[in-house]
Length: 220
Image (cartoon, rainbow, N blue to C red; front, side, top):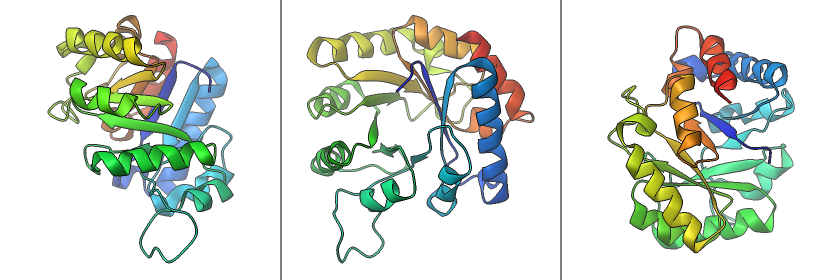
């Protein structure tokens, strides 16, 4: 996957649901193409049809470590792959999982060649997750999510230490998130050694998402 990666988590915001989700995904696609950067989107499950409407990577917000079978209410990695989804968030702070389940999810995404982006809220949890060799670990401080206070500026040493610690034990690529709202935040995150950012409200709830995305792209 082309780096750096800008991954936009749509969550369940009204601004990114239904037709709004498709509209935002198309905006992301236009900016990605115009600036030659990799922007991926993670809409909620009911909007994953977007994967057939845009050519940028579409991720799921969660996946379960299951095969086909009697798993009512679960999210099948095989079904995700069938509709063109390229990967999934795992263990977001709003959808936390036990370590064993994280391991199962990473293993099954590897099996079906889906990109795994596993979230970690502490360095200790990041080191535990790194043993499973996901494609990415997204370091997010849950106390900064949605605050507009970028982790790359508020806690730069924390991000740098996280990247360096993970690099010592694995080849897993690190993203960072929480409070990212402008290009300067993205630029700082990359300077600290990350390979991209995980963003939500900074784009989705912005008055002009395209302007924010263009600011991100120019910073890269």
